[in-house]
Image (cartoon, rainbow, N blue to C red; front, top):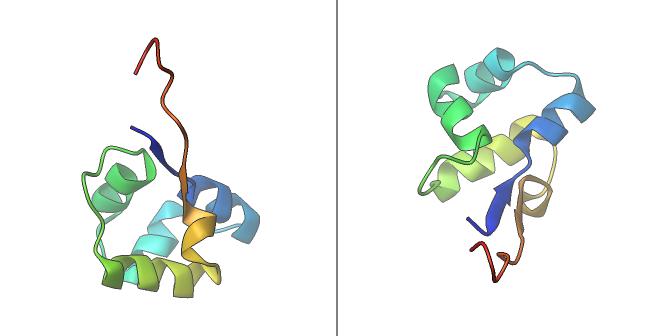
Length: 73
C-alpha cells in the first residue's frame, strides 16, 4: 500500500509504549497495532487527531505516501 504509517517512529521519539499510547487515545492496543503495522484500511480523523495530540505531532509525522514499485505494485 502506498500509505506508510510511522507511528512506531513517533513512539520511539517520545519514548512511549504502544500500551501507553493506546490508553491515552482510548483505543485497544490490538487496534493500535493494526494501525501501526499498516494493516488498517482506514483511520478516523478523530483517532488521528487524538494520536497527534498524545504524540505532540502533526498528521504528516504519522502518515506518508510512497510510490508503489511499478514492477511489484
